[in-house]
Image 1 (cartoon, rainbow, N blue to C red):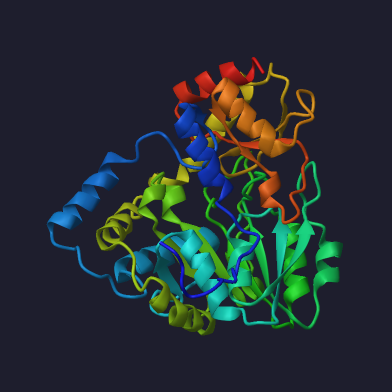
Image 2: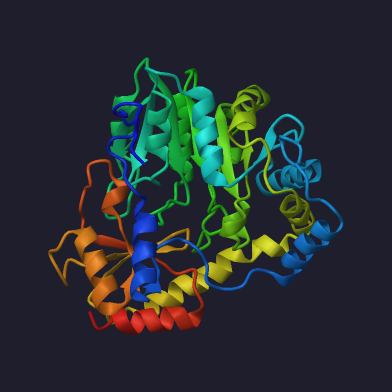
Length: 385
């Protein structure tokens, strides 16, 4: 159909199809092992499925309250209090969302106005910058320092000015697998204290952290928590990414603004899933075992590919392993990722699309949230490249 309204001026002229969709689509086309998009290929808890079915059959199938089912908000409040020692009021400071990406977009939409600046640490999850731009904001980028992807706080500080309205952090970090330390959080607190800067803390991989490290949530730091949106994801925690159920924590005055936008973005999210997760959270073993579970997968995958020509970049959290391929090829990341998908049958994600300028470090991201059989098949191929 021909457009008759004249030329459309794109609000996101530099954005195309997400690299996740591109590589997963290519994996499906080629019948390749898909280690690109971040989703598990193993079953979720049968008990959780039974709970969802139970609530569907009981008739919990209509709209949930706009802030989310109260008993789930109460369960989250209890979990956060027990884990981080931080009290959030389930009525005024917790909101259920249709996944973490919706939560991130809504938080940005609620706060950012034309002329505002947002500091993003890159490589960065690809939804941050477009959400800022769609709301008229300007993104200022600071690069994490390789090879361990540490924050350059001097550079971040140099970006702060009177227009800075938000800083977005992500720990454990997608795509690098790095984690922020207590020192990082104290630096962030010093930088934002006595300012109007809001922190958006993307903590969707909070339970996927390894080597005995503590997840340094904003919730451990009252000063930071008082000016932060904290984003969580039950899809990541319970291996059910397709359920698109997340949550936001924020002080009441920030949450009031969040809800003003949230009601017009999605209003409410999946009702029976919320009831089921509320019950599932009552047993803390359903999430406390995740660090050991995923660390075993990280270590197993790393062991399988240790004889390959790829260089393994340390992963401290998430379910993503970065591999450096400089010893194999000088192709750019996108071309190399596409070629090994087509020619060898293993799909990954190039890291360059996580940079605004396409910075190319010859690194690919592989998801190890897969069955041992999947990891074994993929590793056999990777060791032949």
